[in-house]
Image 1 (cartoon, rainbow, N blue to C red):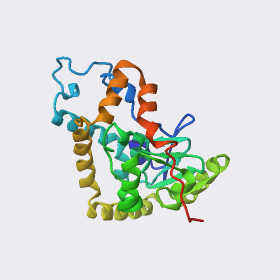
Image 2: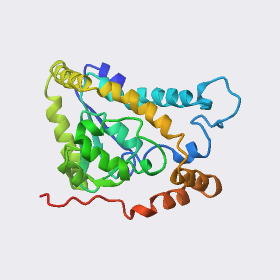
Image 3: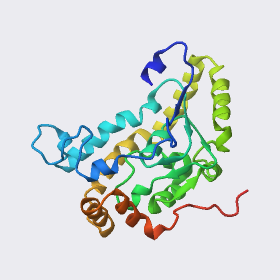
Image 4: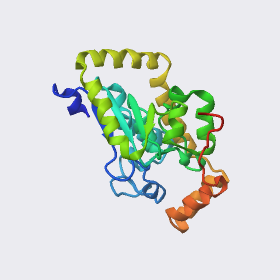
Length: 255
């Protein structure tokens, strides 16, 4: 993305998933099995914060990851997220830091991990859908279809899956027809407004809130960790999500 921001022949950046999903989230199997991203095991005697021995280690690691998952916000050029399939947990952290989000009607968007795993380490939900809908999503970990997400402003628009590629390409083409310098001025003044509303500070708070949530010892989080230790990820997810049924929000009274 930094290279694309640097190139004079690029006016707009399009971000999409390479498989059946945009992004299904963070690696829970690695995290809860005690494995770090480089294959080492938590608790071993390393001279780096990645051992995550303290609250501050955890906050430091989440903040370090934020530098990657929030980079879209600071680029000068517009970034479009094209969401299909699952866009869950860490996938939403990425998508909602883009400038525009388009989704397929059938996309599945939400943060189910709030049911037992922690607090979203990035917080752009509030700026997209306001306090009540943000709380509704995070309190339950329920998901929205792309079509319903567009009705509450979580994504800009949605279309049938078979039309998504052409629709987003056309939107990108229209934006790219404007000079990069103009696009940059539009993006940066709006994002400065978000900063004045506390967006940058809230990301820091979100990182620390996630680290604090990782210390929770309630029954649901304890059960998830025990299932991971004694069984597998599928069992842990099944038991975590069982009380919520299909977990899909169905909007009422909206056209």
